[in-house]
Image 1 (tube, rainbow, N blue to C red):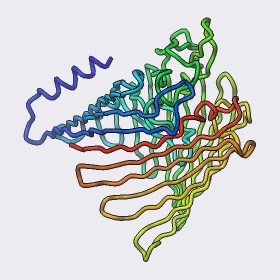
Image 2: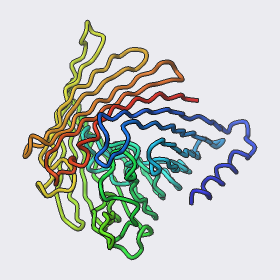
Image 3: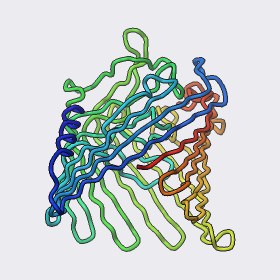
Length: 391
């Protein structure tokens, strides 16, 4: 699939352009350094260096109603062979006509409003070797149609191919013990070729933004089972999910919530909701300080295989409002059933110039319970610095 998409993109670059056609090439080159506080649970090194490149090719037709974007990604990593990987993030042909839009190819679709996790975000698979928070996604093959109405949008998706989640190798950091190079297993006999269907209806009413979504197909979140060699293998079951996301702005208050009902190997209800209050004009009216609080709930209780079954997230967001776009977020999540289970994270970013930017990210993990998903990361506290050049 990737070779065919790449060939199409190269052919597109060779086409002669008319006077009104637009063709543009830009991208990002970044150098990243991770430094861990101690040697990993499996003896992994404390230092991890990587280089990533993500170019973007964009073409637009004479009429301006047809476009194509091609964005491949590649990372080289000094420590983890499984983190040295490539992906096609986007290779998407889009056509606009009247009040509808047709999209075909590989794309990234984001659903969600909350800060601590995104329950309703089910289109794309997580690229877990990229970031521990699950925010980075793999490109998803898709055919979709979107309709725009007066105050609402309707998007429908056919997803013909499933992407397996990436995981760190045993030599890499943020690795889970026993999860080696095992083959994934599927509930469907069609395996990765089971066709998924998804839809989302979004409406705006006064201060409220409301999204209603549905999905049926292969669960992006794997279960984990022991294979015949007693290694841990990911198991991708089928699922049906109904979701809602809500966001409302009242003055300096931003209220947001996500909730799902998921039917898979186990059936559960999950909810994340809270607020962000921004105090505008701190430091003699220059900077803004935001206070974030969210509650995370999962009906499976302490048996849930992920963090967030009865937790509280709290954080501070400091936006400097300077020319370099500098901002900081410091937050943490605490398990209300076990106060010893918690995570703390720091996110900061800014620009050196129009062409150069920086980010600094830090994570602390604390758990004494071997059944807690965070326990596997107890030795993986790290600080990550990244410098990016935009061309």
